[in-house]
Image (cartoon, rainbow, N blue to C red; front, top):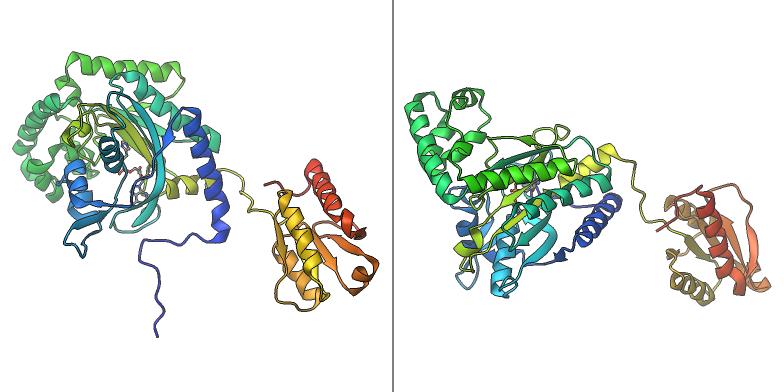
Length: 431
Ligand code: HAM
């Protein structure tokens, strides 16, 4: 029979990769809480219309990348490609933004049927925050500061923050018209993708990477010139708030984002360290999404970061994250192993990580196993030890001699030995 492999672009996370994920997840959770954001968990499957209507049916995600299926009840459902639409849906459905504002965060798998490559997967993970109910630039600054704090706490350097303002629907409509007119006159010089977008989503032509198209765009009208005074003031206020916080940024007038719900501020943190996939975190305002989804007119802003990309950066830039230590490995060679089990459970009561050897075998092989797992101590109870009422405590990570400890003192002695190692900072054994 042929081996069944995982789906292309959907990866297993193996035990030796987990430590760094746990560390990053813990930082993301802690930073969210430090800014007063609360966690929300929404289903991985939603009605397809939620995404087509929120993200926009002319976008790459909706046109080509969604995992959509019809279930047994003839309903069209989709594996979530992102979480802003679901978060907004949940907030409207449960009245979370009824006359109040809310700060939320989420983390979990998303699904897009893109062409897999380094940093781009079909199942990937996002951490995101969303702040619903605040129209002013102060929350824009806060959202960006949350991102900055995450880089700081994870020790990530070298990310570049790009920002732009997309204006309101009205100013964007006027700009779209001017841009379409400009590009239609130069249609023959555009590539095929841009020509197709000319009448569906002309703003997306701005982030076309084709050098020929970029050359034409040099003289194109600029969105800022179409923005109302209050929209310009909002953007300027955000810029000065970033400067006051010491956050450097680059204004990129070509930054338009690939999802239709954005209006006003948009931003991305990019890197040149991950090959072709440069965006580590991206987001912006979606002031009309909630009203368009049937909620009361409520502004929103947020971002999402790709955890695979973030973790690759962490692994490139910071020291190795140790896996969970095994503090003690229990070896019992007698036929009364209940005593050893009792000691193991008491050690676990004290918060230690303990493995009891299963499956018997020679002492030498059991010790080899303990060593392979990186245990700090082996606790050995053979026939001789059983008869004398002791347990042999054997350090495995240095050359210290073993000692025989009375059964009733073994837990205390283990803790003492481990504390000694922690104080010496010789061996990584902290949880
Ligand atoms: P997005 O730009 O589509 O925005 O995705 C955000 C981040 O998710 C990207 O910058 C990237 O790090 C990661 N990402 C996206 N697709 C993949 C993939 N195929 N493989 C690996 N990582 C990927 C959103 O999803 C918006 N919901 C962000 C947002 C939240 N805007 C406002 N609130």
